[in-house]
Structure formats: structure tokens, C-alpha cells
Image 1 (cartoon, rainbow, N blue to C red):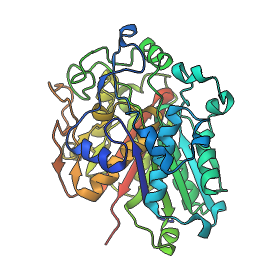
Image 2: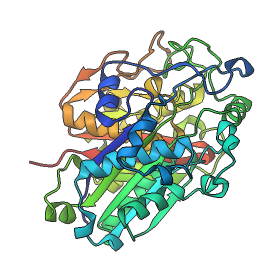
Image 3: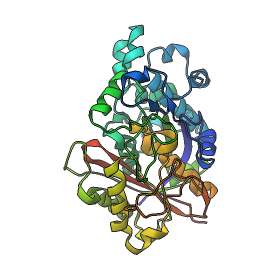
Length: 403
């Protein structure tokens, strides 16, 4: 089977507007949580979010013409900026490549054409177009292979990654530009998730999102966009590309259980991890770090812990597990790609990002959640989970290239 390699990264988050700043903030234990400003916090049970600094807008002109950006939402522009960074990072000269064998696949749940976005009343159809971001990337870089978006809630960019891997291993594509973008903090999103009782009502940014702790009470919205470039081993070698690591395994599955609640005792989460291990052809004990979905909701954190124990058995206590959602919020459709980048950087640097805001432990949750401070550990293989509403689950495995 063809190996799939990672050759480019791009990120826009509340703690950094590029991969370097994002990663440094994660390992320094910084958090982008604050009382949100895009809408009035007095109107909602939730008043905290991880908003991306509007300074990102000035950076987009490096990759995109203002005329093109005028037909996009702010959320889409976050995704486009991260795509520009990743494509630049990979160093590809598309004029020298067979662009009919390059895919663009984006995970998103919504373009966030709500609230302030609607006030301009221009380019309405394009701003509402779900596939606008992959289409714009294809047009900008002359890419003529498959170009589309995936929408499977919080696993959207995980599904996009898994499908891109299959397109490459099947020999259909040589390369894939894969990304995701989050909702923007707006009235519709806040009302909707508050109705589902999924978001924290804690007004303190330091404690509103604290995965795996005793007093967790829900997730916090995180804005952002991320992008990862994938290539077959042969394609990367032919153009002498820089390689971060191997994208070794992936799963995409559905629990077929409930629209908002995970399967009891984490059975669906466990199956997602097992399928990824099977795809990678590795044993559970080879996983040395898990980037958890870790939403800071009662059921996710409990069931994900149970699922890890079920899959990894006696090795579960030896595997460091952390959630970066306490730092950047829940970036929804973008979380699999952004958290995948954290895993890739952990492989590259030998530093594992912490679970910040970790205060009082939950007696029922007893894994090593890397509380508050990053740790150094030379690792070779990591796993990242993304579990979404509707039972859409994805698990991704990244591995160092064998020397």
C-alpha cells in the first residue's frame, strides 16, 4: 500500500495566526479564551469563546486578492489563510505537477453567514456556498482534481483527512490539500449550542473549559482554520519535498446511535480507534500519545477515557493524553486538522502539549492528561480523535518516518 506523507501545514487560531505561533502557544500553556466580543455576552448562558484576532485579515493579502476575498465570510477567510500557509510550506510548484491528480477537500459545517456577515448584503449566494473554500483554492492554484467539502459535524476535517488518504493510497490522487474551518462566534451558533446544553455556562475564561476535570460543564467555541498537505511517498520524493511525518492510519465511521450523545460507555469511540489502528497496521502498544477529542463535556470525557482503556488495556495508563480545546476552544469542523497539526508538531519536537485549566481531577478519570504543563517525550506514533454529533467519528494516526 502506498505511504501517505505530510508535507505542509497551515493554521489560524485564537492563540496564533500561523503554525509556529499556534504551536508555541500550546506548549507554553497559553489559552485564547476570553469574554467574547463579536456579540453581546449578556444575551447567552455562555459568555466565553476563543475568538481569532481580526489582525489575521491583513495577512490574507499575501495569498489572496481582495477582490476574491470580498465574496467570502470571515470564517472562510480563516480557512483560506491557513491554506495559503500550508501550500507555501509544502513548496509545490503546481505548474510542474499533474494538477488533475491533486485533490482539495475541506471539512466544514457552515460558512457562518450569520449576524454581522449579513449586514453587507453582498455576494450572498457565494458566501452561503458550502464548497466555496475548496473551489477558491482550486481556482487560485489551478488544481483540477476532485474539489469538494465534507460535513460531518465535529469530525468533518477528520473525514476529509481519511478520505484524502484513501484517494492517495488507491492511486486516484498523488496529493491532497485538506483543511477545515470553524463557525464564527455569532448569535445563531450560541443560541443553538446553548439549547443543546453543550456549552459551558461558566463566565470565567480560566475555568470555562477544563477537559477531564471534576467540575467540567461543557465546551467553549473556538474560531479558526487549518490545512494539511498530503502526498504519496513517490510524489513527495519526485519533487524532493520536505516531509514532516507519515499519515499512517485513519478511520471514519458512524455510531448510528444518537444525534447528540455518544454511544454508551464509549463503544463507538473505541471502534473508531480500533479501525485507525487496523488501517495503520500497528498494535495498540505502539501509540505513545493521544490527542483526545476532550470537549470538557461530562459524557465525552468520561466515555473517551473508557474507550481508551478498552482499546489500550494495560497500556492505557502509560499513554499521555491531552486535549488542546482548553487552549483554542472547540473548533468544530476544523478540530481534526488543527489537532492533527498539534500531533505532527509533537512528533517533530518531542514535546507533548498539555491540557490547560486542569484543576480538580475527576476520580472517575484516571489517565495521564498532561495537566497544565507540556512534557518532553521522544515519540514515534500518535493518535488523534474527533467525535461529532450524529455519531460521526474519526481517528487519525501519525508516525515518524523510519530512518
